[in-house]
Length: 303
Image (tube, rainbow, N blue to C red; front, top):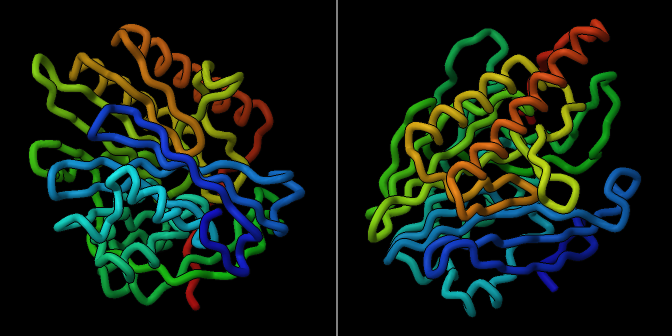
C-alpha cells in the first residue's frame, strides 16, 4: 500500500519494465471519494522513470495522496535518494500528473521542469518567481463550469520553465520538449532518445495528449471535457509527434498518462500515431458541427 493522506483513501503501486535497466512504468492506482462518480473504485496514472547511471529522470507523478511506494522503487533501484541528480519533467499541471511534484522536489531536491502555458491570460510570459507564487487549483472545470474534481489546492513549484524545442541531456540520453497543447493549455510532450548498440530507440511521453483504449490497442486522443482544451491544438500536437517519429525512424513506445504501448516495428508504431491523429481530426470535426466554442481559462489559480 502506498502513502495516503486526506486526498486519497488508498493507493497501490506496480512497477513494469519497459526497457531493461533503463525505462520503467510506475503505475499508481488511487482511490479518492471525491472522484468516485467519475472513476468508480479508482483509476491508474503512470509515471515513467528513466535510470541513466547516476542520473534519474521522472516523467509525471500521481496525486500527492498516492505518492510512489518507495519500498518498491528501492527494490528496482529507482529510489531517488540513491541518484546524484533527479529531474522531473511534467507533461501538464493536472493533479493526477503533477500532484507528487512538490513532495518529490522537497524530499529529493528534484529539479521540476514544466511549461508556463495557461498561467497568463494576457499572453505575457511569466517569470519563474511569478509561477512559484501560484498553487495548482485542485478543481477540474468541465465545459459548463461545473467542478469535476473538487480537491484541495496543492503547492506548485517550477525550477525550469520548459519551452518548445528545449533540449535536455541525461548523461547519454537526449530529451527534447515539444508543445503538446490540446488536452490543456500547458501541455508538453517529450521525445526521449535512448542509445542502443545499433540504433537509438525513441519513446514519446505524451501525458494526456493521447491514450489507449480497447485493451490498450487503439490509439486515440484523451477525452477532452475540461475548460482549456482545444481540438485544433490537439491536431497540431499529434501531427508534430508523427513528424518527429518519422524523422527519427525507430519509435519504440508511446507512453501516455494512463496507458502505454511498446512496438517491435517502427511501422506499427507509426500506424498507431496515425490512428491517434485520425481521432484528433474526428474530435475537431465534431466540435465544429456542434458549434461548441473553445473556452480558455486559467488552470492555475492564485491562492
